[in-house]
Amino acid sequence: MTRRDVPEPEREPQSGVTLREILAFDDGGALRLLLAPADRDVGVRGLAVGDEGQAQPLDRRIVLAVGPPTSSADAAGPVREAARRGACAVVLRDTEGVPTAPEVLAAAEESGIALLARAAWVDWTDIATLLRSALSYAEAGRTAETVTTADTPAGGLAALASAIAENTGGSITIEDTRFRVLAHSATRPEADGVRRSTILGGRVPQWRVAELRRSGILRALWTSRDVIHRAAEGDSPERLIIAVRSGSEVLGSIWAATDGRALSPQAADALRRGAEVAAPHLVQHRLRESGAVRRRNHALRGLLYARGDRRTHAWSLGLPPDAPCAVLVAERDGAAGPSADRVLDVLALQASSYHPSARVLRDADRLLVLLPVERGRDRDVLDLARELDTLAMSMPGSAPVRVGAGPVVPTTLRAAASCEEAALVVRVLRNRAARGGEPEPLRYAGAAELGPSLDVLRILDAVRPVWEAGSGPVHELVRSDLATGGELVRSLAAYFDTSGDVGRAARRLVLHPNTLRYRLRRARERYGVDLDDPDTRLLITLAVRLSG
Image (cartoon, rainbow, N blue to C red; front, side, top):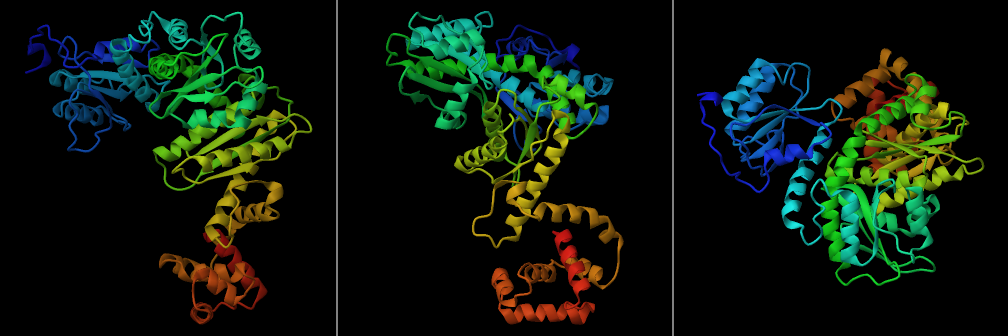
């Protein structure tokens, strides 16, 4: 029986949120409906990414088929499987021709499941955030009457700001993560100067952002899920602040300030509800900007990795090509995971707040920050590296992060040179931590803090092809030993790192000195290498370093 054979009676959705409501939320065109479901409308219970395990039921969930289908047959299988397990819709990547192939459409048609395609200009993270926010948005429309009737699309952020102001008794600004004002309530005559300049300028003044960063308020804002209280101080009135989130992602913030009258006792609760209602609006705001964000990321990646025309990239980023700048690279250690991702996301927010012209790029497991530097303020680069390290260490359960500060280069067009050196600094920090022997390994540094280590790393990179193409007793020793676990190579590394001091090397390896002496003797006897020969020692030292 095909879908055309199924009658289409009017049915009540099985959930409070329907597929039609979710698609109506997507006014930016991130999703394209290819085939409607068999029912007039279907209730949606949630979201599933991939198959989430063969035994996992997908009852009325929207499934993101995140694997890259290379053919229509590859795409048809997940559609049938999702329908069999009770899913209501499948989203495919908009690979040319695949989602609309006859086999794929037939699989959805026969199963009665909705079929959607992800637009090429968004990624899976965008789609997941959009769908989760759409679900929250629809639910908010039923449960948030105590906040405002502005949780409908027609209400908008301006109406929401006014409603929160009425419920809190304060003056409200709703801002994105770059502290640009997206909406605000009416300003009373008693408003403080910061609020007036923020609203008139469309963003929080940079001196104010720097003050909030130094005081730790921003760190608390990026990491806390509750309302933050800032007491009145001087001309600055009392404020309540809350981050607006979609899952673990920070989308912006809501600020409530006293404005000639006290905040209501229910102000904190009103802010919490307001943040829930604001989240879908801020997701829409972010999605509308996603095309521009992707263009900026493309330009920033080209500038940092010296790809394409650098002057064009600087123009696209709104940066003067002849201004001094430096690049920082923050790279996480350990396995990827939600907590490690969250650390880099929070560091990105902190770096963006450091300077209004800072540009931040998230590139897989690392963060790259292009920081304009005023003349005579070279120290700002290492100061930001220290701030990022402090913030990363303050987050519970976070993965270690190494931060490398590149040198200040005279023009934006030479940012790639600073980026390359910052990445080398991170490699040195990581290598030092792996070798051990330091009571408190450095987690952030610039070139000046590392002595000759950067030049050694450059030399190792240069000689690697020569080593890999060579042969002889040292090559045989290293390759054979690494194939069986690398015990001898580790022993030689410790021996050379301690300048041939057997006692110190044995302590580092947690061995008896005689055990280490036996291993060194074995290297001489089995492989015929003379550890007393200067050339042999140099070659073994290079080989050990190159082997990691």
